[in-house]
Amino acid sequence: MIEQLLDRAQSYVRPIGAQPPASRLLAGRTVANLFTEPSTRTRVSFELAAKRLGADVVNLEVQLSSRVKGESMLDTVYTLQSLHVDVMVIRDAETGVPATVAANVAPHVSILSAGEAHVSHPTQGLLDALTVRQHKGRLDNLSISIVGDIRHSRVARSAYHVFSALGVPDLRIVAPPALMPEPGEFSGCSRHTTLESGLKDTDVVMMLRIQKERMAQAELPDADRYFANYGLTSERLSTARRDAIVMHPQPMNRGIEIASDVADGPSSAIRDQVRNGVAVRMAVLAEVMGSRGAP
Ligand code: NCD
Image (cartoon, rainbow, N blue to C red; front, side, top):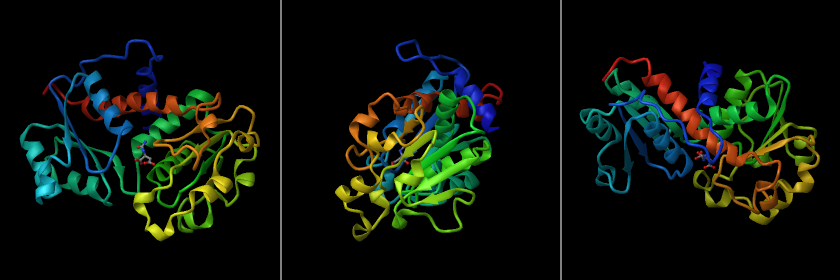
C-alpha cells in the first residue's frame, strides 16, 4: 500500500514553475482541516491537495472555533459531519485523537492524521519516503540517519515506520542520550550519541527540530552546546557519502540543529520535501475518497 501511494503521489509531482495537477476526483466532496496545533506546511499542503482534486475545503482555526468555549472535539466533529464534511484532517497535541474521532464518526467519513502528539505523522513519513526514492531510486540498499530530538518526534516515528517497511537495511538514530527514545522503541535501528559515528558514510541525513513544546523547561538543551555537538555543518556532512542528501521536516531552527549553508546548499532536499507533501496528500485523499461513488 505504501508503494502504491508513493507511485500515485509521484504522478502528481510537477516541476516548480509548471502548472500544478488539477483533477475533479473529489468534486462535490468536502475536506475539513481541524488543527489544534500550529502548522504551516502540513495544513497548507492538505488544503492545496484537496483543492487540486476539486474538493471544497474548510479550515478550522481553533482560536476561533467553539473549542475555546469548552466544546469537546467530538462535538466539533459531529458538527462537521452534519455540515456534510467527508474527510477530516486532524492534528492534535494529545495522543489518540484521530482514532477516537474515527471510532465515533459515521462510517462514510474518513479521518486522516496530520500529526498525532509525539506518536505519528503518517503523511510526513510518506513524503519523506517519496523524497528519498526520487533522489536515490531505491531504499533497500541505503543508510539513513535520523538526527536530533528522536524522543519527542512524531516525524522520526513515522520515518522509522515507513523506512523499515520499505526495507532500509541501515537505519540509524542519532541523538544526545536525553533525547533518545525508550529502549523498546525503534527496534532494528542502531543508536549513536555522536554525529561522527551516526553520519559516517550515510546516504540520507534527516535532521529534526527540538520539540520544545513537548518538554519541560528544565529538559531543554542549551542551544549553543547543542549546535556544537549535534548541529549539521558542511564539515560534518562531509563525513557522509559524497552524494548524501539532507532532509528536515521544518520548521527549521537555523544555527541550532542545522547550519544555514547546509539547509540551503546543494545537498539539501528540504524544498523537495515540501513540494512532495502536496503530492502525497493528494494521493492519500484520492485513495480514501476516489473509490467512492458520486456524492
Ligand atoms: C513537524 C511536525 O509538526 O511534526 N512539522 C511538519 O509537519 N512538517 C515537525 C516539527 O514540528 O518539528
